[in-house]
Length: 333
Ligand code: GLV
Ligand code: GLV
Image (cartoon, rainbow, N blue to C red):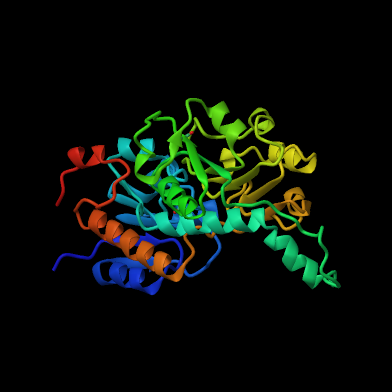
């Protein structure tokens, strides 16, 4: 009998996924729920045929080389894969796989939760009661902003952006979008209308939500200049990746009232320290990168990431490849 391939799972993921891995592989499952240090990671990957990584594990050429030439697959437990040096993997003939589809609707749900919570100041309302300030019904207290019939601007109309647009239509919002592909037909199935320029989206939107991946082109996209082109009443939602927004510029815009509110599922840095200046702002609502954090979605992600890992480690081709060009080069089996 052939020996089972060796794989590393860098954190405990839902049981259904671990079972898929353990059945097919000789698996090292790292029990600590904090990310491994660089040295620990470099040690753990040695001799592995596959690595199941989290978005907080930086997997670059050095890690791949530390693993060795037999490394066949890096399976990311996320749809985003900016933590992986994909070019370095492709160069070495290593598959990189992710979990698209699974996180789409849950992330859109969370985006809408953030949008509604910011608009209606839910976080502030909870604090208001907790701190003993609810002593009477006050006509002028905690007034927010209507979501219904407002204009929602979506930056990046990929699969998550489309699901957000669908939800927005249920709230009778006018949905507009900017997408670097500049294709007017993208939005038609969900009644979203393309803006001819990024500036048009900025100036027209009451709510702006970001659903673009983190790339060289989107890093720092939301900077001081961009924030200055938004409405003063604008609410910014980010459930994509923290570094798409310039944190200092956002802080200044919120603090000075240049825009009204931000609701963030992702931050830069991440994790965000409890004493970070953003946390002092009453008009900034932050949750800890929980876009995909439902029982159902995390379970499906675990199974899919496990299947991608097992496929790659056993000489097959993972279903969800980030670098499909590798399959042509690698001889399966
Ligand atoms: C979560 O952020 C993901 O990319 O899946
Ligand atoms: C928008 O900037 C996009 O990436 O589509």
